[in-house]
Image 1 (spheres, rainbow, N blue to C red):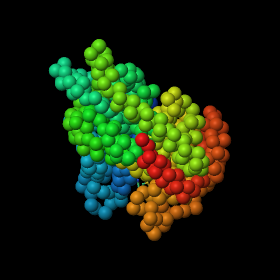
Image 2 (cartoon, protein in one colour):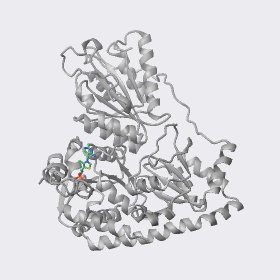
Image 3 (cartoon, rainbow, N blue to C red):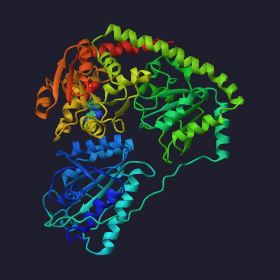
Image 4 (cartoon, rainbow, N blue to C red):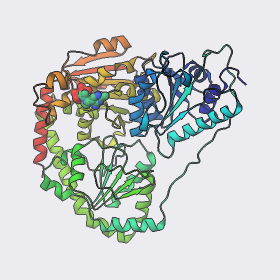
Length: 571
Ligand SMILES: Cc1ncc(C[n+]2csc(CCOP(=O)(O)OP(=O)(O)O)c2C)c(N)n1
């Protein structure tokens, strides 16, 4: 047995046994035992990120891609507070994080000792669980408590709903070992057997009765991680007789989905009334489109089913009537199996008018978008359109808040592109965009492109402070010299304080940041030039690079209001 911190050494071993293999560490003395135990474990891979706020988001990006818990380790005090934004985002995005914060022993709290704060339940309700480990690990029972707590913490990052779990680790001096660690072999761990929830036949009968009775069936997919099984079952979507609206962050695209739905939903209330669903089925997390939220809140369905593995009433459209605690993949495969008989085919015919109505409007929305793109070749919508068009198939796209993700949602993806999309829409912060993209790029060999506004980029520059930036990372900055979103927000746009106190106008460029952190850098002044540069920018072997588009806020606002007025005329 290790004489030095045996409990901590066992924590590292249990993480390895339970497949928590990636750790993002930040420097500190109090956390040294944890840092060394993870670093020296032969099966664990560790990365050092100095700034804990950035570290938290790097871990989030890694966990998003890997779909497995990623560990974080920091020292005590304000270091731990700096994880709060990423922990909160992970909570709402349902991304598994295992957060270790080192702490002073409890008797030292409030004793004017350095980096000592109240760490009990530090992230409040934004964690799946908080676990305070015992300070002394010499007694076997204390270690039994530590061991089962770590198993439990890892289990809770995934089950029943993924998210962050906080483990606070009070540590006494000495903090630096004098001898090598000996990791216990094949340590006992507690695992949770995977389950697949299926609905009883009687429940299906009740659901199918509602399904058949409803003529206007609408399926809305919000933020969701890529799920090949779900994609496969949605592939047989055509015969369900329903309309699918897939948010840009849903990773749930099928050829039959209604493209440009965000633009359609900018139409006048008399047009939207025709689109009101009888039955709404939702899956995934938040949706980007404000038009969609307003539409569904105004034209409430008679029934609204949400597919989710827990009983909490998350009801953003104020219409929820039924939680269905199965996986979306199971739900759609079983639904299409049960609807594949002759009788149901007749039902499809009945809902055809509803589907055709959406499709007709989709082609009109397409024309509206083309008009704006032609009239305003140098707006951000146009820049986003070029990026989406040039994005290599199968690559990974990270979208910044707030106008950036909205432009992408308005445009949608060309069918065959098969890209994955992530955006921190759990809380829609601008505070971890760059770091999340760095984490995502580290986790995959696929090209990972972040498209981000200038404020969000400069806010989170520390995410680029890495020993080696991943070669597959590309960053396109729409630099409109401030937060242009405020110029298109009713209320904010006409304020005399707009430029200085909302947009926060500035003259920064990313050139020196690129130099500091070792990224390639190029800039351009027009969307046409951007489009010319994109093929080379996306080329393999180029290495991490920034492409900064300098663009006018005013042009953006004008194009947006033109789009808004044209959308209103869609009929
Ligand atoms: C951490 C955080 N602080 C403040 C905000 C409020 N906010 C939303 S968008 C935005 C401006 C973003 O500017 P930029 O990144 O340049 O994008 P643009 O508005 O130009 O699209 C701000 C400050 C936020 N979402 N998150």
